[in-house]
Length: 248
Image (tube, rainbow, N blue to C red):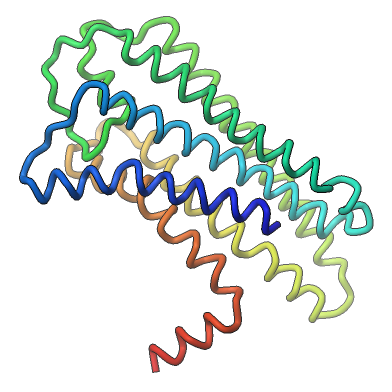
C-alpha cells in the first residue's frame, strides 16, 4: 500500500506542478500568454499524470481487495515484483494515452484565434479552436478513453462490493472498523477524483459557461491532488493529534 501511495504522491505533485505555477506566474505578471510548445508540453504532462493517477487508483482498489478478501494470498498476489509491474503499467498507460491525444490534438489546424477560456491548456478548449470538426482519429481516441474510464470504474465498484461483503462477515466490531479504516481514504480519494472529473467532462452543454468551466477545471485538476495527501495523512494518529491541538 505504501509503495502505491508513494507513486500517488508523485503523480499528485506532478499534477499541481503542471498547472498551478504557470497560472500563478501569469497572474503575477498580469498576462495570459503561453508559448505553443509550452502549451503542448502542459497538455501532454497533465493528460499523462491524470490518466496514470486514475490507473493507479484502480490498481489500489485491487490492492485493498486482496488485503481484505484474500489476506493469506497477499504476499503471493502482490509481491514486490508484481507491485512494480502494476505501477509501471499505470505510468505507461498515462504516457501512451497522453502521447496519442497530444499528437492528434496539435495535428489539427487551429484557425479560430489563440485564446483559451481556461487557466491551462486543456484538450476540449484547444479543439474549440480547430477549423474542422472532430477528426476520425480524435473520435476514436475519445471512444477508447471513455471505454477505459468506465472499465476502470466498474472494476473499482466491483472490488468494493466484494470488500463490503467480506467486511460484513467479520464477526468482531473492531475488525470491521479496522477494515473500513483501511479502505476509507482510498474510497474518498476515488470519489473526489471521479465525481469532479465526470462533472467536468459530462456536464450538459446547456449549463456550460466560461466561469463555470473554470471553476470545474480547478475542482478536478487542483483540488484532488491537493487534498489527497491530507486524506491519507489523517490515518496518522500524530497528525490528527497535531490538527486537534491546533484547532483547540
